[in-house]
Amino acid sequence: MKNHPISIVSAIRMLQLLVLLFIILGISEKGNAQDSLSVYLKEAATNNPGIKAKYKQYLSALEMIPQVGALPDPEVSLGIFLKPNELNMGNQVADIRIMQMFPWAGSLKASKSEAALMAKAQYHSFVEERNQLFYRLKNTWYAIYKLQKEIKLTEDNLRILQSIERLTLVRYRSSGTASGTSLNNESALAEKTQSTSNNAMKGGQMGNNQPTPSVSSPMKVMPGPSMGTGSGMVDILRIKMERGELENKLSLLNDQKRPLLAEFNSYLNRNPVREVYTTDSLSISESDINDNIAADSIRANNPMLKMYEAETASNQAAVVKAQKMGYPMIGLGFDYMLLQKRMGSEIMNNGKDMVMPMMTVTLPIYRKKYKAMKKEAELKVEASKLQRLDTENQLLVNYQQNRTSKNDALRRVKLNKVQEQYALQSVQILRGSYQTSGKDLEEVLRMMRQLLDYRFQITEAIVDYHLAQAGIELLMAKSAE
Image (cartoon, rainbow, N blue to C red; front, side, top):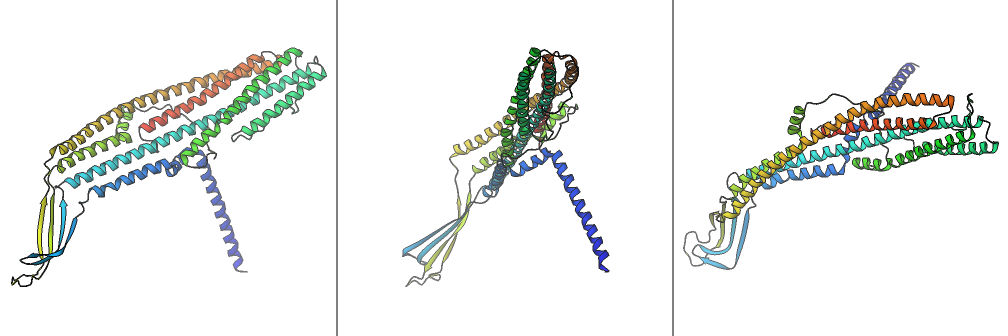
């Protein structure tokens, strides 16, 4: 009985811990959904096979440093006399020689510097490839976001059009001028088309679970002036034509989803049809970076420029190496002779093995090849400097292009948001007028198309803004942030 309170307290604490764990997991999942792009960037950096291959190339370049910095392998030669060689000191039966060559002082150091700097250039190449991957991934992610927004806008516009169609059908039914057969046929056709539209929208929805109203839903007939059979029928057919175009556009947008998902998932090395999550909306900022600060950041941080700087330094080390290779190499070693006693010889050291120190020196007398090696390295130094300068100029041009695109996108967002409000007010006024008078349906449909187009343009401008920002971040080597 005394243990019961303790067990109850333990159970309560365990329950509290479980609740806290679920809350933490829920917050974590929410955070991942809101910050999905940064999560995808980290996943791509970890799983992309192209990035892994580039990093392996950098690691392999590092392995060149101990290779070029090591001394040449020593040479060992062994000679055995089939018939002993008669010498005063005895009969020589074997000869062993060992020789180690030493390059001129500083040659190995220059070779190691050249290899280390080339590995550094390979690393900056890897960083550039990673940043390019991030840029491509952002482009595709923004394209998916844009597609999802366009699908949502099209579905919303289609619902509005369906509500207008229902209103037109009610007016057409209540006109009292058409025959019952024609009214029934038209109503059945409208309900069938409405059902098909609803099924298509439900099948193509991307995370939108809002129910689509059906034409057969009970509606209260609003009093109003009657429409003629011809006018009402034309309005219905015009709405059907407009709805058919929207449904076709919606199907086209849904078809465009699969290749974008496949492209995006390929960057993460995962299933091509796996779902990709985006945010509900993207914000933009009117703050702008100073051109001088941006240019300095590009010059200091861009991995392409750093790669060419490392290549230049590596080629400069190659110049020193070529100059050192034009000097003699010195070899140190010894010759060990195995002797047998010579019968009849009374020499004191008869049959005693002999050791003879040896030294060799190479004679680099063919100077053309060494001069050519040095000239080759000097030309590579000049080429690397020019490539860096050309790349810097191109990067600065790309920055200005992205900056212009960013400012243009910002202006388009502002303009189209104003135009959207005007178009929305016009649609509301025209719909109200159509509900009361039954006139100007064509103007209502035209203004609805205009409103949808403005909303498409707003989404496109916002995406263009972020693409330009991603391009600037790529140039300034901020893509990994």
